[in-house]
Length: 369
Image (tube, rainbow, N blue to C red; front, side):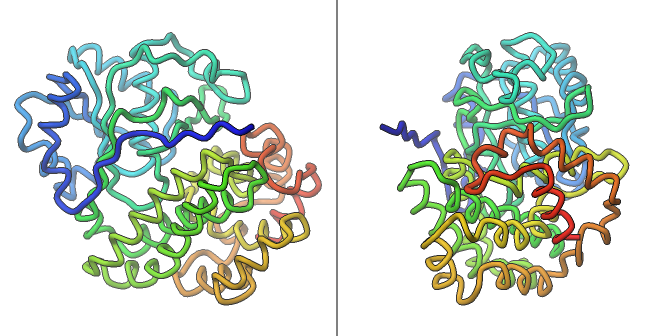
């Protein structure tokens, strides 16, 4: 028997963000705490989304990889401003940071106690304030995900997983992504595509998740180059948001070795590497590693993608201008050794179709180097 749950309320469509005041009233939120970053503020998106709000407090200090230190800072401001709910506007980092703040509205720190690898899912309850999540990138899908991925005070990048972490409402408005720069469009888009691929390969029994992942994969592969080259291509932007949404709806089934490696890679503070870019660079090597374990799924992907899956992703990375490998991103041999060990304790390790050892992970990193 398998328990299959989908998932939270989603409002999807061009112009959907204009209804934020109505949705906040619906949830009983009078003074929202807006979590975002300086880039989204500078792009005018925060003003656009919050223009109809009489009372809101804006926190724009989200780092590229959200940290517990930033969560604690934001929560202190949330309390001082007497807010009664959260509105996340931005990419996965802002949405995950907002989820961390939301946990603290009903739970005590530190956050590590709520991490999946520490048995934390059972410690997260529904005693939290409402959260509306509005993505401005088409990548992580955190707006419909049950995880908040946070670098905790001990330096680990951990997933805080619970069905209670799902935002109260996700507003997916493709118009908010029209001005996204090409490089960020490509990197976040490859994040979404990696979710679709890893979910499809994950061994758990969940046919709806696999169907959703494949539709998301089709949408993403057909749109990512167009969206990256022409930010005003409305159809491509819409398809990329569908890919991101469906990748995250599907990855409740489980991810795998790509994410088991990118989480500790993303925790290397001196590099501060982009999660989607890491996923893109690692995906071909993980596909090759998994091939012997996924049977007919490899053939299904080959038919769907128009070629050997690892080579298709390699070619796509080159056409999008992704880095040539991990070493080009500053990852050293010593870092790879440390990441290989850390991947074994990541919450995505156990859901890869072929269970990897420490030496396997190091081989994958070398293949992607």
